[in-house]
Image (tube, rainbow, N blue to C red; front, side):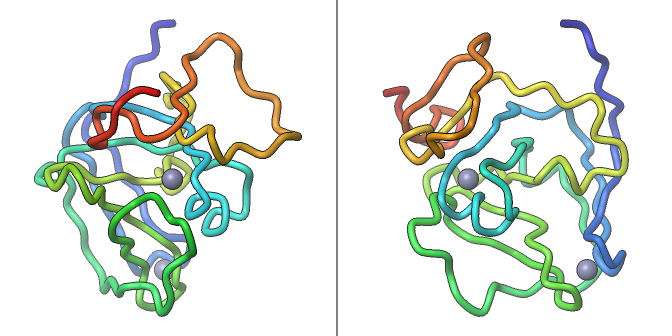
Length: 147
Ligand SMILES: [Zn+2]
Ligand SMILES: [Zn+2]
């Protein structure tokens, strides 16, 4: 598949108070099935782009969520202080990267997941793309080992 990724790319939360610019090609793109992504996206999995934290520019007020989601597999979450949208997540194990839900990017059409991750938590009624690898837990990019 040959899709060109426009760099930089812009995005933001639904209310527009937080905006960001991704200034690098994503390190990886995943469909994440972890409980945190399920609860916070309101969907069976979240399409995530992984970027070097230093290459994401944010404007607007961010806050930590009032309460953590049980079994969230990402270390820290940062939400829009106004609408509460979970804009950014950080990995516990890899401090230099962060994750953005690609649906918050203004034009997410270039997204192409390279793997399903945290499939240990995948809902049984979700039809997974059999053409991409399944990572039971955390992928190496996020500090895990492929299981
Ligand atoms: Zn996740
Ligand atoms: Zn907002």
